[in-house]
Length: 228
Image (cartoon, rainbow, N blue to C red):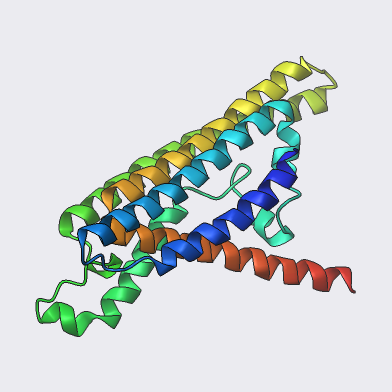
Protein backbone atom coordinates (compact mmCIF):
# COMPACT_ATOMS: atom_id res chain seq x y z
CA UNK A 1 0.00 0.00 0.00
CA UNK A 2 1.43 3.39 -0.98
CA UNK A 3 1.28 6.31 1.44
CA UNK A 4 -1.59 7.97 -0.43
CA UNK A 5 -3.84 4.95 0.10
CA UNK A 6 -2.63 4.58 3.69
CA UNK A 7 -3.49 8.22 4.36
CA UNK A 8 -7.04 7.84 3.04
CA UNK A 9 -7.63 4.89 5.36
CA UNK A 10 -5.91 6.62 8.28
CA UNK A 11 -8.00 9.79 7.73
CA UNK A 12 -11.27 7.85 7.82
CA UNK A 13 -10.16 6.04 10.98
CA UNK A 14 -9.35 9.40 12.57
CA UNK A 15 -12.93 10.52 11.90
CA UNK A 16 -14.16 7.35 13.58
CA UNK A 17 -11.93 7.79 16.63
CA UNK A 18 -12.82 11.45 17.08
CA UNK A 19 -16.53 10.58 17.00
CA UNK A 20 -15.95 8.10 19.84
CA UNK A 21 -13.85 10.66 21.74
CA UNK A 22 -16.59 13.27 21.34
CA UNK A 23 -19.19 10.88 22.77
CA UNK A 24 -17.08 10.00 25.81
CA UNK A 25 -18.44 11.51 29.08
CA UNK A 26 -16.97 14.95 29.79
CA UNK A 27 -16.21 15.83 32.48
CA UNK A 28 -15.58 12.30 33.73
CA UNK A 29 -17.70 11.93 36.87
CA UNK A 30 -16.77 8.35 37.80
CA UNK A 31 -13.64 6.23 37.73
CA UNK A 32 -15.10 4.31 34.78
CA UNK A 33 -15.71 7.54 32.88
CA UNK A 34 -12.18 8.69 33.66
CA UNK A 35 -10.70 5.43 32.44
CA UNK A 36 -12.88 5.44 29.33
CA UNK A 37 -11.84 8.98 28.42
CA UNK A 38 -8.15 8.19 29.01
CA UNK A 39 -8.41 5.12 26.78
CA UNK A 40 -9.96 7.13 23.96
CA UNK A 41 -7.24 9.78 24.23
CA UNK A 42 -4.55 7.08 24.16
CA UNK A 43 -6.10 5.50 21.07
CA UNK A 44 -6.06 8.79 19.20
CA UNK A 45 -2.44 9.40 20.22
CA UNK A 46 -1.46 5.92 19.06
CA UNK A 47 -3.21 6.65 15.77
CA UNK A 48 -1.02 9.74 15.28
CA UNK A 49 2.09 7.78 16.24
CA UNK A 50 1.24 5.16 13.64
CA UNK A 51 0.82 7.89 11.02
CA UNK A 52 4.34 9.17 11.58
CA UNK A 53 5.78 5.66 11.71
CA UNK A 54 4.39 4.85 8.26
CA UNK A 55 5.24 8.30 6.93
CA UNK A 56 8.87 7.79 7.96
CA UNK A 57 8.99 4.52 6.02
CA UNK A 58 7.47 6.25 2.99
CA UNK A 59 9.92 9.16 3.23
CA UNK A 60 12.86 6.77 3.20
CA UNK A 61 11.50 5.25 0.01
CA UNK A 62 10.57 8.48 -1.78
CA UNK A 63 10.95 11.71 0.18
CA UNK A 64 10.02 13.87 -2.82
CA UNK A 65 6.57 12.30 -2.96
CA UNK A 66 6.15 13.15 0.72
CA UNK A 67 6.98 16.76 -0.06
CA UNK A 68 4.51 16.86 -2.97
CA UNK A 69 1.79 15.44 -0.65
CA UNK A 70 -0.68 14.61 -3.40
CA UNK A 71 -3.08 13.22 -0.76
CA UNK A 72 -3.59 16.80 0.47
CA UNK A 73 -5.52 19.64 -1.13
CA UNK A 74 -3.85 22.70 -2.61
CA UNK A 75 -4.90 24.72 0.43
CA UNK A 76 -3.39 22.21 2.84
CA UNK A 77 -0.10 22.13 0.93
CA UNK A 78 0.05 25.94 1.01
CA UNK A 79 -0.04 25.76 4.82
CA UNK A 80 2.63 23.09 5.14
CA UNK A 81 5.90 23.54 6.95
CA UNK A 82 8.39 20.91 5.76
CA UNK A 83 5.80 18.40 4.54
CA UNK A 84 3.32 18.82 7.37
CA UNK A 85 1.69 21.09 9.92
CA UNK A 86 3.78 23.57 11.89
CA UNK A 87 4.27 22.28 15.47
CA UNK A 88 3.67 25.66 17.11
CA UNK A 89 0.11 25.53 15.72
CA UNK A 90 -0.69 23.33 18.72
CA UNK A 91 -0.04 26.19 21.13
CA UNK A 92 -2.09 28.70 19.13
CA UNK A 93 -4.94 26.19 19.25
CA UNK A 94 -4.67 25.79 23.02
CA UNK A 95 -4.69 29.54 23.59
CA UNK A 96 -7.66 30.01 21.25
CA UNK A 97 -9.75 27.21 22.74
CA UNK A 98 -8.86 28.27 26.27
CA UNK A 99 -9.92 31.87 25.62
CA UNK A 100 -13.23 30.85 24.00
CA UNK A 101 -14.16 28.47 26.81
CA UNK A 102 -13.03 30.89 29.53
CA UNK A 103 -15.22 33.66 28.13
CA UNK A 104 -18.23 31.35 27.78
CA UNK A 105 -17.94 30.20 31.40
CA UNK A 106 -16.56 33.32 33.05
CA UNK A 107 -19.57 33.68 35.39
CA UNK A 108 -19.07 30.17 36.81
CA UNK A 109 -15.33 30.73 37.13
CA UNK A 110 -15.85 34.03 38.97
CA UNK A 111 -18.11 32.18 41.40
CA UNK A 112 -15.29 29.74 42.10
CA UNK A 113 -16.75 26.85 40.12
CA UNK A 114 -14.13 24.73 38.37
CA UNK A 115 -15.08 23.64 34.87
CA UNK A 116 -12.09 21.34 34.36
CA UNK A 117 -11.96 22.10 30.63
CA UNK A 118 -9.43 23.99 28.51
CA UNK A 119 -10.91 27.24 29.81
CA UNK A 120 -9.82 26.20 33.29
CA UNK A 121 -6.07 25.73 32.78
CA UNK A 122 -4.05 26.19 35.95
CA UNK A 123 -1.21 28.73 36.26
CA UNK A 124 1.26 25.84 36.25
CA UNK A 125 -0.24 24.52 33.01
CA UNK A 126 -0.06 27.94 31.35
CA UNK A 127 3.57 28.25 32.44
CA UNK A 128 4.40 24.86 30.96
CA UNK A 129 2.56 25.67 27.71
CA UNK A 130 4.61 28.86 27.40
CA UNK A 131 7.85 27.00 28.07
CA UNK A 132 7.02 24.32 25.53
CA UNK A 133 6.11 26.94 22.96
CA UNK A 134 9.48 28.66 23.35
CA UNK A 135 11.33 25.35 23.10
CA UNK A 136 9.35 24.34 20.02
CA UNK A 137 9.95 27.67 18.27
CA UNK A 138 13.70 27.21 18.74
CA UNK A 139 13.57 23.69 17.35
CA UNK A 140 11.38 24.77 14.43
CA UNK A 141 13.86 27.50 13.56
CA UNK A 142 16.79 25.07 13.71
CA UNK A 143 15.09 22.63 11.31
CA UNK A 144 14.05 25.50 9.01
CA UNK A 145 17.68 26.60 8.89
CA UNK A 146 18.73 23.08 7.91
CA UNK A 147 16.24 23.05 5.03
CA UNK A 148 17.34 26.54 3.92
CA UNK A 149 20.95 25.37 3.92
CA UNK A 150 20.00 22.32 1.86
CA UNK A 151 18.14 24.51 -0.65
CA UNK A 152 21.00 26.98 -0.81
CA UNK A 153 23.49 24.21 -1.54
CA UNK A 154 21.23 22.94 -4.33
CA UNK A 155 20.90 26.43 -5.81
CA UNK A 156 24.68 26.92 -5.81
CA UNK A 157 25.14 23.64 -7.67
CA UNK A 158 22.51 24.60 -10.24
CA UNK A 159 24.15 27.97 -10.88
CA UNK A 160 27.65 26.54 -11.04
CA UNK A 161 26.58 23.63 -13.21
CA UNK A 162 27.99 21.06 -10.82
CA UNK A 163 26.16 17.97 -9.61
CA UNK A 164 26.99 16.22 -6.36
CA UNK A 165 25.96 12.81 -5.10
CA UNK A 166 22.18 12.66 -5.61
CA UNK A 167 21.67 9.84 -3.11
CA UNK A 168 23.39 11.82 -0.38
CA UNK A 169 21.25 14.88 -1.18
CA UNK A 170 18.06 12.83 -0.92
CA UNK A 171 19.24 11.20 2.29
CA UNK A 172 19.96 14.60 3.78
CA UNK A 173 16.50 15.87 2.82
CA UNK A 174 14.89 12.74 4.26
CA UNK A 175 16.56 13.34 7.61
CA UNK A 176 15.24 16.92 7.65
CA UNK A 177 11.68 15.71 7.04
CA UNK A 178 12.07 13.07 9.75
CA UNK A 179 13.27 15.70 12.22
CA UNK A 180 10.24 17.86 11.39
CA UNK A 181 7.87 14.92 11.90
CA UNK A 182 9.58 13.93 15.14
CA UNK A 183 9.06 17.48 16.40
CA UNK A 184 5.40 17.40 15.37
CA UNK A 185 4.73 14.16 17.25
CA UNK A 186 6.88 15.15 20.24
CA UNK A 187 4.99 18.44 20.55
CA UNK A 188 1.63 16.71 20.33
CA UNK A 189 2.62 14.24 23.06
CA UNK A 190 4.04 16.97 25.30
CA UNK A 191 0.86 19.03 25.05
CA UNK A 192 -1.41 16.07 25.80
CA UNK A 193 0.75 15.02 28.76
CA UNK A 194 0.43 18.40 30.49
CA UNK A 195 -3.37 18.37 30.18
CA UNK A 196 -5.96 16.44 32.14
CA UNK A 197 -7.81 13.68 30.23
CA UNK A 198 -10.80 16.00 29.74
CA UNK A 199 -8.60 18.84 28.49
CA UNK A 200 -6.60 16.47 26.28
CA UNK A 201 -9.81 15.17 24.72
CA UNK A 202 -10.99 18.72 24.00
CA UNK A 203 -7.63 19.63 22.51
CA UNK A 204 -7.53 16.56 20.22
CA UNK A 205 -11.13 17.13 19.11
CA UNK A 206 -10.39 20.79 18.30
CA UNK A 207 -7.19 19.83 16.43
CA UNK A 208 -9.04 17.17 14.41
CA UNK A 209 -11.92 19.52 13.61
CA UNK A 210 -9.42 22.10 12.37
CA UNK A 211 -7.82 19.40 10.21
CA UNK A 212 -11.19 18.25 8.86
CA UNK A 213 -12.35 21.81 8.21
CA UNK A 214 -9.26 22.83 6.27
CA UNK A 215 -9.37 19.61 4.24
CA UNK A 216 -13.05 20.11 3.35
CA UNK A 217 -12.48 23.76 2.45
CA UNK A 218 -9.52 22.73 0.32
CA UNK A 219 -11.55 20.07 -1.50
CA UNK A 220 -14.25 22.61 -2.34
CA UNK A 221 -11.63 25.09 -3.54
CA UNK A 222 -9.91 22.51 -5.76
CA UNK A 223 -13.27 21.39 -7.15
CA UNK A 224 -14.21 24.95 -8.06
CA UNK A 225 -10.85 25.51 -9.75
CA UNK A 226 -11.18 22.34 -11.82
CA UNK A 227 -14.59 23.47 -13.10
CA UNK A 228 -13.34 26.82 -14.42
